[in-house]
Length: 67
Image (cartoon, rainbow, N blue to C red; front, side, top):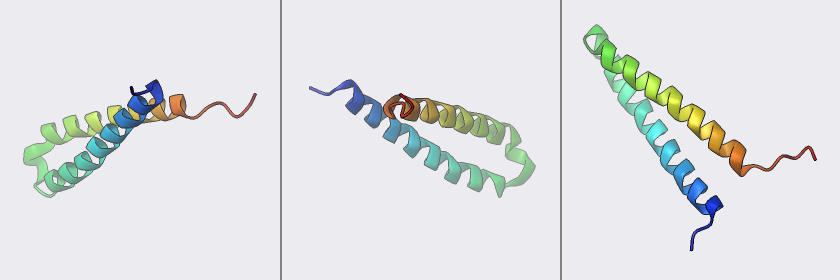
């Protein structure tokens, strides 16, 4: 049976992977110019949301060292 920590680690891995994939997609769309601006903005917003969620998960996984 998976522990809560294992499920958080798996979710963190999935989010990091999606974040990296968005880097690639954003770079490709940026090469195409203004025609794809709306889609590019949406992807960047998704990437920022992923970054926030990754940070939150990392803070849950790392215990407070000031105790």
